Image (cartoon, rainbow, N blue to C red; front, side):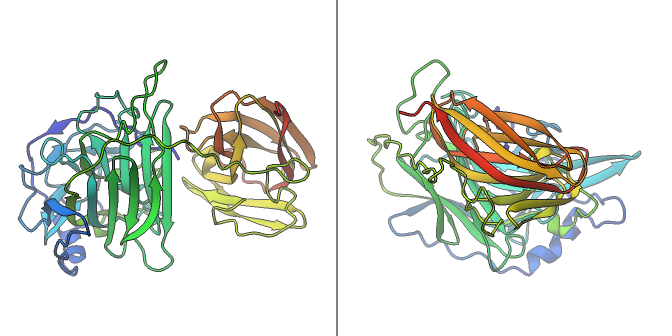
Length: 473
């Protein structure tokens, strides 16, 4: 998924305005909207340092405003990153304290037939910076198509190793407003842009209905992500370098001061834009109960970069790296094992396996080519080898589909480029060969993209293969 590009933070250290502007269409004012959501929530738990840590700073938001000594308001224009729709205005109308909570409230306004969005974004840069430690917050996220709340970290000196992503970024919590059971924790770094991402889906509860504790434990040679104390992601595999130069000494870039950022984005490449179901009321706000920084008494920074151990998937007896490429077995298409069916950005439909084929029925094409998507991850892409990618497909009506082999962890580069295939009502075989010229990657991904292709006609796929045809050692 395409992520935020955060460069050149603009820090404005002042407050403007008060939160009493009513929304259009008879919706409630900003302060009225959050009253119900904050008053019924219990106060935060006392800070009990985890074993081995001591508290170095906290904000429990028990005053009547954000303190200038702790927080900076940011200002950014519409479209500053990721084609987001909101303007960030440094005002306590959009990021304010109420009933012991920090509230970040996006607002929709209509004037002369034009719609605009405003939201809040605050950070601790230059006031509470930290290198290593446990950083945690208790947060309830907004619900609604187009919202992307975030609790994340950027270097205080973004130019030390170079502009994003070389400088590094730590996303502690991101939850899409239209998928509020799934949590993302991500590390961004390197050139080329690389990421290490973990997800956690709730089986009971909802990140928009209850407060949850989101945290990282950041040490010189490892970063771990937690939700309510549950470890769900960890990595020690990162780097940074300038193109044409050697890598900087490990653990760069995550060996410098970072600061915390809290914001709610509206629209953009990842969450998609708000639609008719999106309501800008109290459920559109992010509520933060507390933010806490802990550290250990000392850290050993004399660490070595671990040797990358590749988990190469083995081909089957026919040389095919695709599992269940003949669709002989039914499987769960919602998990992260083998085939997975995905919907994004207003795409709608379903997929099923039966009679030796995969059938994808779309009801809405969505706004992006990947809005309706079938994928299989963990493809072993080895530099210097030649691959053959083939499949059979047809559609209930003539239409287009795009196929690709991509790199989800390496800036979504294409090992095999997005290629349009013209589908007819008859089965046809499609076969492509390509050379793998990039660095080794054991996390490549086969993709079939069926959104925004000018049709929602049902697609049928069978006999999918990815195999090495040249370059064997």
